[in-house]
Length: 180
Image 1 (cartoon, rainbow, N blue to C red):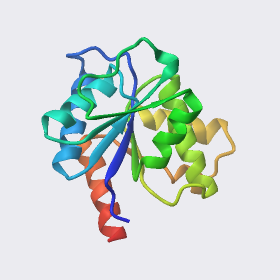
Image 2 (image 1 turned 180 degrees about the horizontal axis):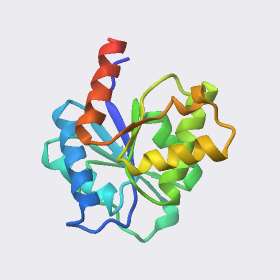
Image 3 (image 1 turned 90 degrees about the vertical axis):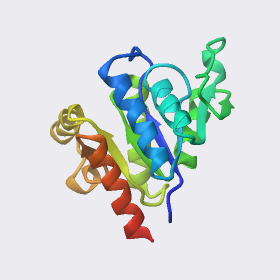
Image 4 (image 1 turned 90 degrees about the horizontal axis):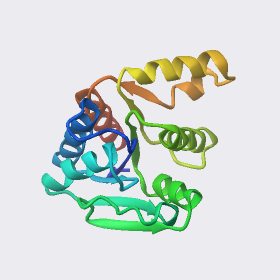
């Protein structure tokens, strides 16, 4: 399976100019330069930064938005909006269209997206694909899951922590090469 759409999970609270915003912008740019389309929740914060980086690099940017956030406007950097009636449909769409997942730091919504993708991979409801947690902060989250849940090592291994964008891109390339 050659990847084409990378779903990026991220938060809405990172202000423009912050390190998190800059990282998301650069990730969007790098994904498009590597030949991928990007999908996100389609609003502000790291979602907007990702969309802007991807759009400015000439990429196709899908925003999976939801009626529950009306009248909040979607990011102006989207090239396609897929508006869902509720969060369940939004999560289902995000997980079903993605050939791989990258998670940035975010809030409870980001954590919901990550754990749903993780669970779908674990149960085989999604065929194997990368789930990359970008940033060293995710190591603490994975360590907490290892310590405080019943997730075994094979389930934990379904998610990979990448400390840098370069490492995340390398993991994607490795998966593409493995699947080719």
